[in-house]
Image (tube, rainbow, N blue to C red; front, side):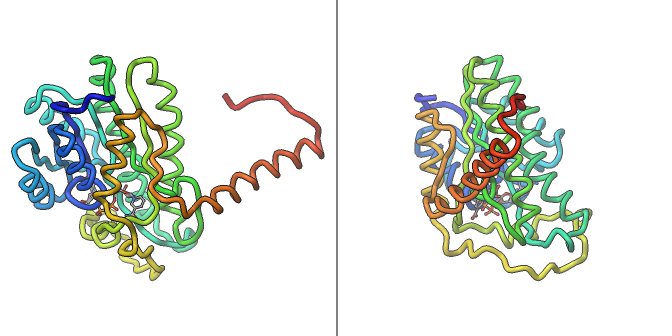
Length: 274
Ligand SMILES: NC(=O)c1ccc[n+]([C@@H]2O[C@H](COP(=O)([O-])OP(=O)(O)OC[C@H]3O[C@@H](n4cnc5c(N)ncnc54)[C@H](O)[C@@H]3O)[C@@H](O)[C@H]2O)c1
């Protein structure tokens, strides 16, 4: 989508961190922006700072009806939507052998269903319009995994897979798709994930696992600018760090080595997954 001026972006999780950075970058591209977050005060503060072209909106992405209400608010205020950033997300560090089912449900409901709800609520309108772009926030944790990130990376691998299939599915209908896969970004992820966790998801356990040092990460504003570049250029993977290259190569080398070992032992086998 090369022309962004005057168009409308909806960004979830825009009250803080990367979503806030995307909202500012969209506004700097002269887009009108819906600043959506479960934390209404934070959404209001960001929208106020951006100015008249921003509309704050409360949304809980774990609820389909809440995301549908966000779509209706955006449409009634701005008349159309061109860019959807399914960005809201939360983090828990827990060993899988210790995690409570409520930990799993919290991460899956926000990080994965949040994206699915965005698609269910907004995709039909984008397809009907014949134009639009969707950015799903995954993570480097959508390519590589390890304890105590198992729960979190489960959701982020799913967002990468969903986005890859979605990009192929909607390309002919004029819809662009990007998947944002940052390494460490200096945001409120670790504290905010607990601050906004509804009591129903609280397992009452302190997992006492070390949190990633997000404070050592890059600026969310920089990530926002790179997201808007990707939207303009129609880039699929939005990679903001190169320091995971060796680990990604090691993972893929391991898969290819297993494939070669299979051929060496059993011979060539056909039968594609898709
Ligand atoms: N910070 C990092 O190092 C990093 C790295 C890779 C990926 N990410 C991903 O980036 C995204 C943004 O996280 P961030 O780092 O900016 O953290 P952040 O906490 O600063 O911002 C996330 C925002 O999402 C909101 N939110 C949480 N649950 C919500 C819900 N149910 N509905 C609507 N809004 C909700 C929070 O209130 C918060 O304002 C997440 O998907 C996260 O997994 C972050």
